[in-house]
Structure formats: C-alpha cells, structure tokens
Length: 485
Image (cartoon, rainbow, N blue to C red; front, side, top):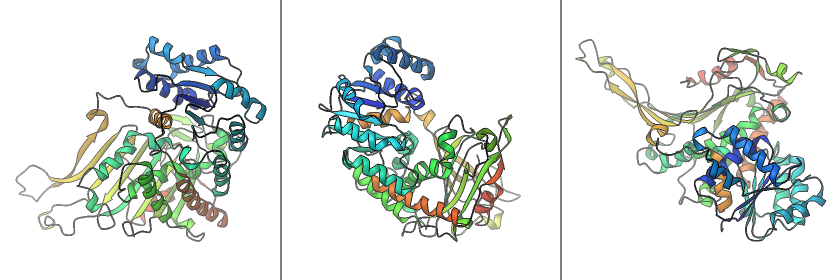
C-alpha cells in the first residue's frame, strides 16, 4: 500500500482526539514523519469552520503536549494541515459536503473512525455513497467494536460491505506500546528464552492491568461494558496471544496475526459449571486510594449496578506448547497502583545441590512491565558474599533492562503515534484482524454466559485494595501468589 495523502478523523472534537490523536499527529509532523502533502480533515457534530477548529486543536496541544515538545513554528505548520467539516453521521445528506471538503477518495485516503456502535452502518453507507470508500481508501476502527460476538459480527459485516479486510485496520492501542512490541524482540530475537518458553520450562503466567481511577466521566460507556469487555476481551487477550504464540515465519501482518489467532482459538472454553471456579468478579466500594477518600462505584454512578469493575480469571491454552500451564489474568479499577505487567514464572531447577548446605532456591521470574515504567526484569539466584560458615546464603537478584534508561536519548512515543503512522502508511502488522476479534469474543461470551447461568454478581471490594479476597484464593489454591511489586 502507498502512503495516504489525506487523513479523515471522525470524532475530531472528542476526548480521544484532544488527548491522543492531535498530540500524536503533531508529534509525527514535528519529527518530519508525515507525508509532506498529507492534509488532515476533522469531522464531528460540533459546529466549527477551519479557523475555529485550528484554535480548538491549538488549545488541545497546549493542554496535553509536554512542555519540551512545544515549538510554536512547528505547531503553526501543523495547524495549517488541519481542516474541518461538521457532520451528523446519522444523516446521509451530509456526506457529500464531507467528500467535497476532503477532496474525494482518490489519491489515497485514510479514515480514523471512532463512533458509537449504532452509527457504524449509517457511517459506512454514507462514506460509500459519497465516494469515500473506493480502492484507495483504508479505514481504522477504534473500539468498542460490539459488546458480544453477534454485535461484533454485525459491525464487521457493515464495514466489510465497503471495506475489504486488507483495508480495515482495527485498533488496539496496547499494540502500539513499545514494550508490547518488545515482547516479540525478547522472545524471537534471543536464543535464551525460546527453548524454555513452554510447559516444560514455565510454571504459570500472570497478566495484570490495574488502574487507580474510577469512572472518570465514562459512566455511560463503562456501566454497559464492565471490566471483562473493556479490558480482557481486547488488551489482555492480545498480550496473552503475544506471550503464547508460536514463532512466526516473518515479521509481517499476515504471519504474526496468523499465529496470534491460533492461540486465541486454542483458549479453553469455560463451561457454565466451571465459570464460578475459574473467574472472580468485583465492584469497588468506598475506600482510600493513594491517601484520598473515594466513593464506591454505585455512589459514583448514583444507582445500583451489577457491572463488574474487577475481574480475575484462570485461563488455559490447549496446545502442545502450553498444556497444563495456567494463565492468570487480573484487571480492575480503584486498585492500589496503576500498572500493566506480565509475569512469567519459570519452573524450579529439577535438583538443588544447595539444600544440604542451607541454600534456598527460588524459581526464576521474568517481569515485563508495560507501564508506568517500562522495563524487563529477570530475577535470578546468586550467592551472597561470605565464607558460608553458617550455611550457604542464596539470594534472588534482578537483571534489569530499563527501557527508559537504556534508550534515554530516544523519545518515548505515544502508542497512537505508531498506530496512526502505520494506518497512514498502510502497514497492518499492529492491527487486529477480524478472525482475532471473533475468537476473542467467543471466549468472552462463554464466560458471560456462565456468569448469567450461575447468577454471579460482583463481590464488593474496598477501593485501594487488590480486589475481592476470592481473587487471592483463585491463585493461592494452586500455590501461586499474585505478583505485586
């Protein structure tokens, strides 16, 4: 695919555009990475003309750009790329004016579509009717893409009526994070790990994405979604697939996504009777986070709700590499710390030569921290200095690769910078294919069906804690403790 010369942003006045999209596009522009001829057209319901939208974008950059990235000349030249056309996506009549503003679909057009699920079909039809869905047009789709397999298929069918799969780019912003991409480099660029990256070498894997925040103005969306659909269905299953995938033959969109979808299809489907034993749900009550008293979910929502704000679960990948290795997933709001990490717990050595001398061994642990810090840490055993007259002393010590330190001279980019540039250039590697999405939903829907069949309601947990005590029991009965460090 050739690089686009036009970019059309739906939802151009929304929170995502202000916090992420405009700063990301400016970052690419400031570093000379955008095609010189690229024009950017924003559209939303808000009434703006070009001048007022540029003022709006300037305010967003002033608010959300780090101080060291602000350059008045570069900001001015970036704003000159921007145009705006108001549009009510539910009204087909408005798309003709939008097409005129963009300059048609010829010459390479990339569309970033962030819209309510109910507007997908009319938006796609409007784009197609206005000539903005031809061969030179590709479309990026921001989540949520449905609430279950059926609604996801409905949205994907609507998109597929105008855009074939090779021109459809489904966005999961976690795949734009440098540390997530580093999972591939760590696994497939080093001879050290792959020989033990299997059920013979690994005891279990933990994936945690914890947030300290509550609803933050997302009540309408979040209460209709919950933690399982908001975080597990997309981000966490994508991380699991990268950790568990077989080595792809090439670093390209087809080979990598082929291997990811094999993992997702190998996830063991939970039967309704198993769901209460393999999953834990919770909803935060009042408590304290970082020393600040906060309200419970129902109080923030101002009504009772059965939506889960926390979920922990035990998953299995039924294939040769991972048979018998549990994957523990945990995510929630109003937890003690904001962090995203993957912990790979290796099996102990088959025989300790140190036990008779008092030396105690711990199995090796690999920690991949995605945020807020970015590092890879391997915990290994070392002997403490000394003459050992009272016994051998062994201690776990970290081998650290801090990406923040090691690449201190390289700017850490917003995930959307990478994804927007890949959309503009037409590289699908870090986007999610339809068969991946559907495999994810099939597994998630089985869990939700089990919750319904068993009448499971979320258990209360104090804000500022690590969720319901049942989440601890989920791992402890297997002799496993959640990593909290």
